[in-house]
Length: 331
Ligand code: MTE
Image (tube, rainbow, N blue to C red):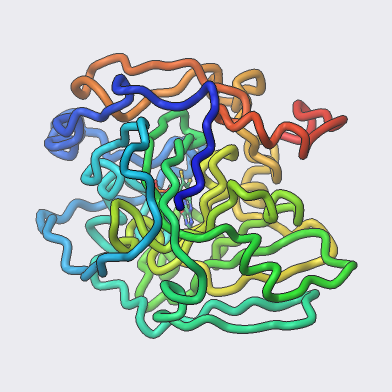
């Protein structure tokens, strides 16, 4: 049985993405002379970018078996949008760089290490990622801090299941995540301009209670198949009530720790990106408003798909995690 979380924020047919938006996106951007560094970076940090004309994905995805509710009323962003408009700076900072540059990313063999303040540390290999825990489909909204959003059917398992198997010690208060560091495979890790000036590996963190929340998904697939490299193969995090940069990709290590761990965007620009990064329409990014977002689902390239941003991205069930906290200060 698929876990169904019904909320007032459940999506409607209006949320379906029109496939045509990005078909010629690169050509349009090129003709405008725009080489498209991500809004995440401050303007002076705009990274070098190049275009390849080879759009053919070579990476092989495996079909997955998972529990899902086919009658789910939510509608989703078409797959080709979610897998071609990405942020994965290890492969370049333009939205089309990951799909263009990551197709030869080799994810098998893979080792995901679970360690730190746990009584039963363990490792999971590539095949185990898909078999150790029962897989389920979760249709979540993904709200990027850049003020665009999508609706994506992820496949994975609650992170809580993995953490429970590791048997956390009482002193564990946070969970630290780390992406693969492999400059041979990741051009952004070989060259600071290509990689947006980030000190790799990309790292992220959650408070332990956030990590244990049922919505927090360790994700191995989308749209019925294993993840393509541009979306974080073979395993990534999805935390739907937080800005997308918390949803770290291609994870090799999950460590339980006592102190709040450093996180990539907070380290790079602390005044712009906080540790918590809860979606919050009342706390603007210093360089743009967070009151609304561009839903990548309907209309053409110039269509105004603006919708109001919801607190916690509409996942109000997490509000109690932050009771008594000043979310303007702890953004
Ligand atoms: N993880 C790593 N390792 N590197 C990245 O650059 N980008 C983040 C997040 N995870 C990123 C990452 C950002 S900013 C977003 S919005 C989401 O991935 C995008 O996920 P998607 O490409 O699957 O939509």
